[in-house]
Image 1 (cartoon, one colour):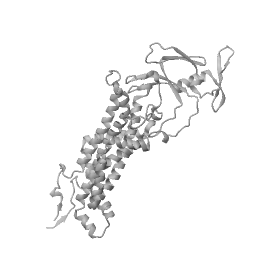
Image 2 (cartoon, one colour):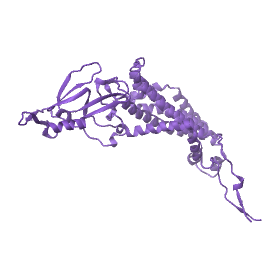
Image 3 (cartoon, helix red, strand yellow):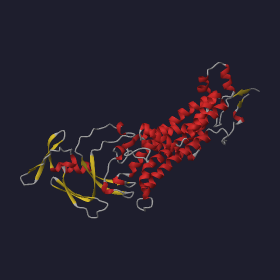
Length: 435
């Protein structure tokens, strides 16, 4: 009887590269995937920037003081008035990340309704402290055009004695003549709309949802830059200390311990004196502190890996230290580095919020979650306005929790001791019989 050798079917899900195995394990972790979803949404909000924010101006600069401190879900009718200047128009790419639309309108919140009276519009402006605001009468043209400071209105009447057209001077265009009816239609279509403030309004009537969305960009930027600095410096010094040992290890670890012992606030103050306050200083400050933890982790991993047989074989083949470190040592220690990088990302967000809360982080008018909590912390005891401090605080918790869940998921995914329940190779599939 003859037997024909067949192919072995691999059903073990742990087969394949370390990266693929880790990804399979990571996807099975529901909490880690939940954190990943939050991260993806946050990145999406950060990249698109003002393109998707309700307030699309840079640094959420649109203000309507008359509607400040309105509760979430507040709805009102907005009337836009054209500012008397010619702004520079920016592209879509200029409005992404930290960019935004150039502010060219002043907004009014209408109390109830409006009406036209020839070339004029009559409306009552909503005001938090006034239950019966006065009626305002304004020329329609001022809401549509950037008028020259020497502008003079000329009202042209028809045979019935009614104002049919208006002449006025526009910046960059000169004299413009428009019919009253056309201006009324344009104002209704382009400058009057209903707006809902889903998370309410903050001080000066700024949109709270837009402030939080713009603050997410700051948090992720600080986290990313700080992690890149910490990982780059930490891996470099940790690998050198762990591989060469001896006096090199002693010098580097002495430097690590010195940095570790300096309070973060002192480092921030020192850098603020030399670099000035702002986002750049915060990123460098946090990165200058977080790298020491990465260096300690990498050093410990390298001390273990350098004694492995494949490293000894590389030395025996005459490979240089640089090649051995980059080709053979570092690839085998990246698992713990990725885990600590995710944890450092969460730490960076938390530290940036704390520094901004103390006033030494990002500076106004740039929004920041920590700065929002600091500004409205006294409103926590106010039943109607507690959301001003609760919402940014909750966003900090969500972002930090997301990165901690991701970090835990990565740690478990790279843990070789993790046992996955999977079917073994079926002996009946190993060979196929024949006569």
